[in-house]
Image: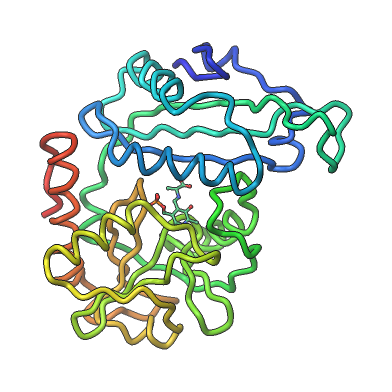
Length: 289
Ligand code: PDD
């Protein structure tokens, strides 16, 4: 397996980062994950635009133009022969020796890019059957719109979910539901798709944005506003969404069944529309039945 370290493809075993890299020392960096179907990137520009936007929000200069980055990522994908899979890429602020919270006066440092691509098939069964989630207080910072490498709040919540055999932790600030540890959450109530507004409290998921667009195109009303834990528990349908899990239905919340515990009709329709977007961009894929 070859990975990208700056603008070089190297064997995974030979890839190294400096211990004084600010990404390693402080989580000082940003990342993205882009999905491929049939060897083609899906919603590539949206992800890369978000990467540059996240970087700009923390004054991090990505050392490559968007064109250069695309060339590098395409080489990475080709070299590893990825058909349906994920590319994870990180850009840190770079190496600062000695370690110091304060960035050097000769800022900016040279950013460091790393990326890996892996084959990961679509999980048809999960898309149809869904799974349980837990709820967890959202203790993260107030800039969740930045896709930062600092993921402590996310991974602690995700691991709590995992320990309880749940797919995800739905995060909430008091009564208000925000998003999940690594995905967005939406509910359907009386035929309306309801999901948190794209503000500083959530990552504005690219999958979320595609879902909102196809919902509007197909006459499903959309409300972008926060909802409460009670709304979540009393919803007709609940689903979570991300680049890697597409649209995954939620069957139980903290052990209590959602409606009849099966994927709801609007969730199924939205997934069908979502797959149509993938097919239009990347060619035929198995339909989520
Ligand atoms: N996570 N919210 C959070 C906190 C996320 O980490 C993600 C994605 C999303 C959904 O964003 P998108 O639809 O653009 O994937 C929402 C990715 C999959 C990850 O970190 O692995």
